[in-house]
Structures are given as C-alpha cells and as structure tokens.
Image (cartoon, rainbow, N blue to C red; front, side, top):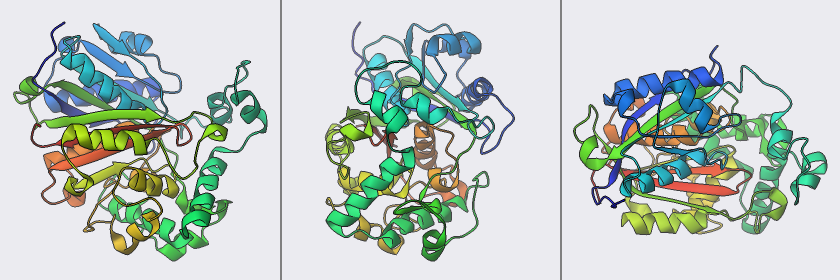
Length: 386
C-alpha cells in the first residue's frame, strides 16, 4: 500500500480509574476505550487498527471483547516499554496505509489481584525454556535486586550517592501534589527517602515504584485527520526502540541501557536535541531507572546523572520537569506504565495538566523501559509537525 506523507498524531488519550479500582483488567481496557473515544470524538466503528500488551492480554481476544474489527492487529510485548514500541508500530502501519485509525489500550488490576506468580511467570514460569531464564527463574535475583545492582555499580563507578537518587523520588512526589488521583501526594524530603527501609541496597522503599490498578488508551491517526477531531493533536515527531538483552544476567553493562541506542535515533528523526525538550516522561520503576535514562538519552553525560538531578531540576519549576503526574514513584504503576507516559506527555502538550502544567510546553519525550532495563522505546511528541 502507498505510504502516507501526512504524518501521524495522537488524537485521543484517556485513563481508566487508578490507583485503586474494583474493575478487572479487561474492564480497565473497556473503560479506557470508552473514555478515549469520547476524548477525540472518534466512532468505534472507524477504528481499523488495534494494539495491546500485558501480562494476560492478547490483542485478538481483547479486540473481540471490545467489539472492534481491525484490519491491523498487534500485541507485541516488551514489558513496560510496550506502548512506546506499539506507538512506533502504529506510526509505521498508518504511514504505510495498512490502517488509518489505531486504538491502543491497557488494563491491569495488579493491586487488587496481587499474588505471588508475577515475578516467576515473567521469568519463564513453570515451562521448560532455554537460555539463562531457566537458571534465573528458580535461583536468580529478585526484580528489585536487579535494579539495585545497577545502582550499586553506578555509585561505585561514578560516585553517585543515595542522596542524589532520592532527589528523583522527591521531585516525583512534588509533581504528584498536582495530581488528585496520585496514590501518594504527601510531601517527602531526601531525608525521608534515606530513612525509609532498605529494600535491596542501595535502594530504599521510597526509591521503588508503587503498585496500583489502572489502565489507559490512545487513538492515533493521520495528522490530517487528527486536526479535524475534538482535541489538539500531539504530533509524533519520532518513535524508536532498541533492546540490549532480556534477562538481567545478560545485560552488557549495568550502567548503560538500550536508550543509548534508540535515544539518539529519536532525536535525529525528530530533528531535535535534548535541549529542545520541554518535559520528559521517563519510566520510573526505581529512581536508578530515571537516572540511567537521563544519561543514555543525552540529557547529561554518562556518570553525570547524579549531579544533573540535584537542585530540583526534575521538579515543578525545574529546568526539565519529569514525570509530571507523579510518575510510578508516587502516582501509579499497574505493572506496565508506558501508556501513562504517553498520556501525560500529550496532556502537557494540550495544556490540560492543570496544577501540573509545564508552562509553554511544545515538545515532550516519553521513554518506556521494559524487562530488566532491557527494552527501551522512545517517542518524541510536539505541538507542530516536523
């Protein structure tokens, strides 16, 4: 099919209820879809592309549940970065004429339906599988332990401190105060982070993301069509992805992620540099995740992330407001938070963020992290087309 030269935009955004909800994961998908269609004014019958990812969600079954008959369907699963990767796929599908209007949804009841199977299932579950997962599953590190190793090595190699990591959590909590739905919004200090109990050295409790319910939805379509819909479009200036490993034992360097590969690609494709970005929405499973992404995306040099986040740089009013809804550290984290990054980035570009609004926001970057610092997806959005 003929490739479109009209570009692609996010035309609709929505979230289901969070951080706590009585809904099932599938009901989170349905509520988010209902809200996103209302947001952009698109009829469900005009959705001809559908994408989703999740612990139990297959696009074919979810499309049936939602009553969608897509010509293009995708359920690529890369963990927390899935929705940035799916955005990349949606852009390609729309540009190449495979479909015109793509719905992406996510839903999770992780908080309400907590169990003991998630970590082991992600590591391979009971099935006999090849490769390092067969050893990591029964004998390997915990999830938080994997990130703690990255933090420990960063401290050893570059002199990063726990106080600097704590600045990231403090900034997220300050942003959460502008989000009435945030799970936690009470002020915290660096000292509060350091005095919270140790989970896996050097990561304290407040260095770790919350566990919540929640879901979200996006509608992407051609830029031409998006301009005629209900809300201002957020133009996709670039969408890139890269992977360096899946299992943490195979990570080439605990202090460098695949964002160092796909980040420069994203800036090149968008014709922008880190200095041009007004806000960043970075996957904050742990404080160290944010610090590594800032370095790998080029906002500061490798090893300089600790100094970079000092002085409230990421907080409201700072030079680079980050995770302006409160992020996974304070607002919500229902297992895979990548779709929340894209919703918040779009909300900022629309000027709809209320007390959390970044003044004059015209460009936004969302970077999802999947697996164990494994798969990265970067999407740069703007209020104007390339």
